[in-house]
Length: 357
Image (cartoon, rainbow, N blue to C red; front, side, top):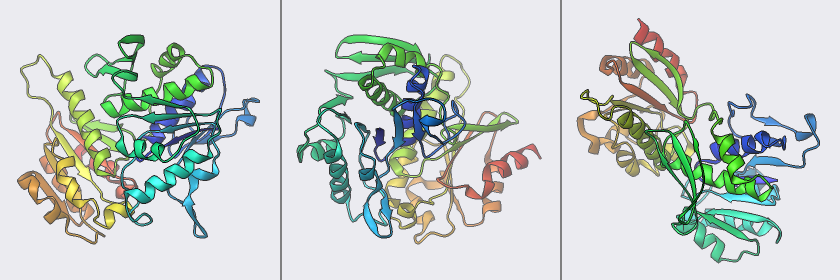
């Protein structure tokens, strides 16, 4: 079992890892909380296609069941585990960050001595987890002196580095620092089961991402509608920043103004509905040119929380009214980034239809 844990990036990293193993001929089984577009399904048993011993699983820290409040990932017993990052989330079941760190340490303690932990060295929370006790070898990434990935969104390049040594380079279609971090974690986990990094990089050049991760749902009158699963302030910030870098690099050298980002947010997760993260929202949306928030069914005032954004923030409690306001504001060239961990009332189709009309 190869398990991918972390507050952010689990689905994308699991999909990358499963695809790298598939491309190397290892035909893994997998269970992923999204649909990797290279496969078209979110789960399969390796026995359905081969006798592969490998199984990739997205390892979530949410509780197991009503009668078992331990995080579900402690049941997976991985030999290889990725610890991508660790922040406070799931405020409905965890009191604070320390409580989540305890569950991550339970996961660490399930790994055997001959296993491998691939851990993000840039995360102080993960370093605290490992400091509690760890008897499994640890391979850290995002260290200047160790494994990391450099890249350039403007040219779509991905360079795997180990210290000052360039291990390999490939073309790649994803953007954002968060996706480069996901990629190096997947490459190191695949390396543990025998896939050399150069081979893994070749696979990433053909990686098609995951549905609902910066998925282009359509373009009407030069206005593009994207769908993304981001629902935590950190994920919102990195998603907006990734799109900003992409459009800024695409317009570099041109006299025309860079396209605007219209961020459309539904605070739908249990943590967001409780208002635990509301103070972080304005900063997470700062790089957007305009912000539209669906304020219904919240236990807090979204307009008050987004007040630091001034006139560029619009809050509506009626979905049709929100769609109307977005359509009125949208101009040719705009990038409309819709972020929610739910269906958002079919807003993507509503926007495309309204723009076409």
